[in-house]
Image (cartoon, rainbow, N blue to C red; front, side, top):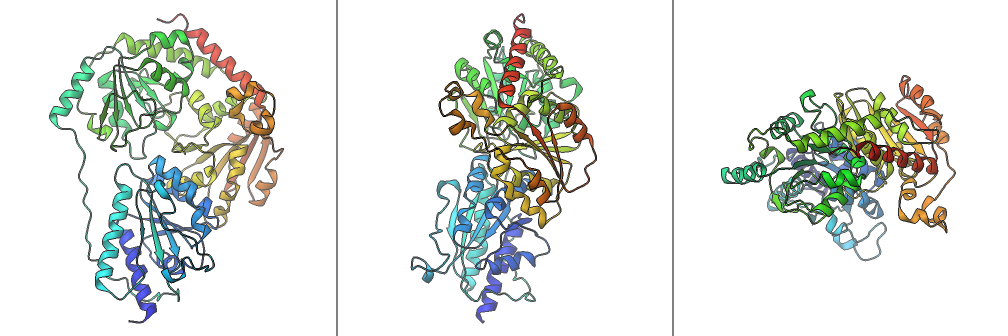
Length: 570
């Protein structure tokens, strides 16, 4: 068999195996060495291909696709520093437990370490930020190698999809010539199927958990970020049986579509409530059950670290359970769904009433919050109020996700909220949002600060290759707003230079470059008018000019109002 046929069989076998393993999408950045694989993916009518010329952005776009679907997504690039640019997204995927299949084309072995162009050491280049890394063999006319390639690729995807879910790396050396035969049929795959069993609780385990729950006097449910397939209806049925207050992180997506008979259990304003020393003192739980990672709220983390509940149960399908506070007493390696049918009906307690009463007071503060000119909180509140049911909201890290936590009241609307909270960075947010929008194809809104937008302006390039539809709300406070809340803000020397980092940039010209529907606003009334206008272009940018000092002042006034309203509770 000639070299071209050997190479064609090799890459078709690889792409067919990936498809069989559950891959439905691939994000490709153009390059020479990856040519055979790019052609093989493009020729496969069962795999959707996306193009993004910027590999750093491509990584986050793929991450958005995988986050929104729960399916493994392939990233493909050429050799050299192209592969290096994937590293930030790979890191986020590792800590956020997102299944990326990173495929880096490489020079053949004889061109490594000898000064060949565009050749770097790609073996294990992502270090501990991938679950599995392999340097695949070169194409050969060899039945045993074909068998190995199929099964090793299946193993790799299985590792990516096994808890803790995460990225894997396939390094693929390819020798010239790099063209394939498009009319050649895909080879027959000999590996048939991977069958995965479910991780369930045994009867003794259920009994043990029932005892812990039955002995609780002040029980608390905490729900952090949950995956896309989390069954909200099953959860609320469980919570209604348990009758414990539920502290719902915005990324739990439990603050939307809340059943009417569970609204009293949905505690959305715990972040503000726990700033009250009085309330924190009377709200100490003896038993906590947490699903997902620790929520965004710092006051909640400080509260749990200080009180150290007697029983703190974490449900996590991975043995690498997350316990950054050092307070977990019981780790249950199972899906949260395993607990939903394991508890007996309980009665509502005074402890649950305490949380519900305080949450109602905080909600009143939130719903009546008016803000002032230059305040970001009122913009976030207005955005949430005007999101249509059936839409998706992607939030940047730093202050946007915290404002979302503060101003997102429980609602019967159907909304989904996403953010990159694996490593909590502000890079790649635009690309992630565009990936989520392409996967879900719903009305999509991105809430982002000016610095985070600057970090990933290149993410908009994907709109030149694929249909997109997104509204981007940029909170432009000319710098890093979150630092104004941190201790370094009390030291005026070099603060603006090192932390405020004002750029003086605005984004009207970026909007024009991408033919976006652009508006700049300052006041909440202007913002509401713009967000309620019809969206007439694929990309809509609403740039809201705010003030860091005003923002801090208004947030602290809001928190003080909540503290004042709950000081007589209990």
